[in-house]
Amino acid sequence: MIIFLLRRLFLLGTVLLGLSIFAFSLGYLFPGDPLQNFTGLRYIDSAQREQLIQAYQLDQSYTTQYVAFLTRVLQGDWGLSFSSQQPLLNEIWQVLPATLELTTYALLLSFFIGVPLGILAAMKPNHLFCKSISGMALVGYSLPIFWWALLLIMLFSVTLGWLPSGGRLGVLYEIPTLTGFMLVDILLSNTHYQDAALMDAFRHLILPTLVLATYPTTVMIRFVRDAMLDVWEQNYIKTAKAKGLNRLQVLYRHGLRNALLPVIRQIGLQFSTLITLAMLTEVIFSWPGIGRWLIDSIYQRNFPAIQAGLMIISTLVITINMLTEIMHTFFNPLARKY
Amino acid sequence: MAKFRLYLDENNRSPLAQLWREFSRQHSALFGLILFSTFLSLSVLAPFITPHDPYLQADNLLLLAPSWTEQGLVQYPFGTDDLGRDLLSRMLKGTTYTFGLALLTVLASLLAGLALGALAGMSRGVKSSFFNHLLDLILTIPSLLLAIIIVAVLGPGLENTAWAVILALLPQFVHGIRNAIAEQLKQDYVTAYRLDGANNWQVLTRLIIPNIWEKITVLSSMALSTAILDIAALGFLGLGAQAPIAEWGAMISDSLDIIYVAPVSVAIPGLLIFAAVLSVNLVGDGLKVAIQKRRES
Image (cartoon, chains in turn brown, purple):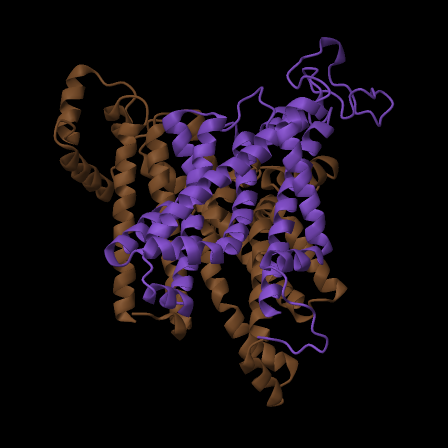
């Protein structure tokens, strides 16, 4: 297991190294002056230019420049944003928690809805109810998310007026930012309108979470159903039934434990798709997360922000991938190959 | 696992005929196939069958209601948009962009994936692991982010998004094909063929490719649904197809500001995207089930 962990760690290092090389080369690939792209300064006069070129070692070879770039990234100096002239890392810490919050709730929702429905659909594959679950999963799987979001907004926000159509919290409430997770922040805050603010934040969360959860839920249903059907055919299930265990016992002790293993892995593999969908959801619901921030950056030609966004999002995805894979190996002795 | 059958049906049909038999037994898959072929023919024939020019702006017919309402005209079944362009013609034209372009990107990505996957699958050691890690890298960049980077470097446009989609689809293909090849290499008939003196190239072209094409088809169907959704999403965000082009995603974002006046102009492109993706998924699922059933029989 330790050798496996070391190998994974080495792989993580290699991928991160490759990523940083790619991010560094973007400074040259993006249109405009590389010095501006690296520093994020909009206007550089000639005296300052000389000084900056020295500091960023842009007159040296590409290898030296890359090492300097890597040192800056590790020290937390990620340059400035073109549009606001603020340090990028600060901006990212402001927007990243919002995305993580939304993604976490959507993933949890998809897990709690998708897994039971998937098992149900696998239990009696030819029953009408189970067929309709599979059918619904296929429909949800094929929905273009931005259109689906628009439909829900039209129905619940515009026609019925039940839910707000965008944002994280009504402007009436002021909640100090501690963790960046809105619900946690509200619970930590000591204001007299805590309950009302919590209710309001919750109402703002419903539609984006629902939209974002649609795709992972349907993937989960389809995946659990297939895995369950596969496991249900195995000989050890027959043995368990022959021993006289009832249906629930067989399901829990032998079926679920084997069928849910690949699901852990699937979460890691689907995470990058989930981030793409989260970006679209954020744009539509004006959710102040990293996805909307990045889309705004491309509209404003804010190249340093795109570079920083690439590094942070990809690192996140790689880490989640690694964690799920390690968990998968941890729970499944068969997957341990040295 | 071979199942016991009382009545043996003739099993000496060709693999393809068996596959079709199992496929056509599923109504949903057949329905998907019909829908898919409709979209395919529309995407090729679109320039010839549009009733009006999709870019012609008729000043006297702005925001015409669809023909099923009182105010509509029968010449314009879905009505016109805020610039007086015929919606039906634009929908038809959009099939070429969204559906046709998605097909092309999948094809390009498949060819590149086949070459890289074969290289990765047939090689061993350092070369093989190098390929894998390079792919892991691309796999970790979400497709929309990759598209943003490509748009930032090359500028927005339909062509550049096609490159982004090709790059984003590539890792799935290479991984899938590499795993399929690795599975095939373990088979006894490959060893037997090697003992006969076959080299790598012969093993690949004569044994492996004919045996994995089914898997490739399923992979492509999954990739196609992703490609359609990605192209439409990029068009919607304004990073892909630019304003006058009648791409479905771009049409939705164009019509967003008139959604109260003409909800049809948002509803129909969305429905079309949905139908296109659904048809691809139905065919893909049908194929998967058919392949599995054929193996069992």
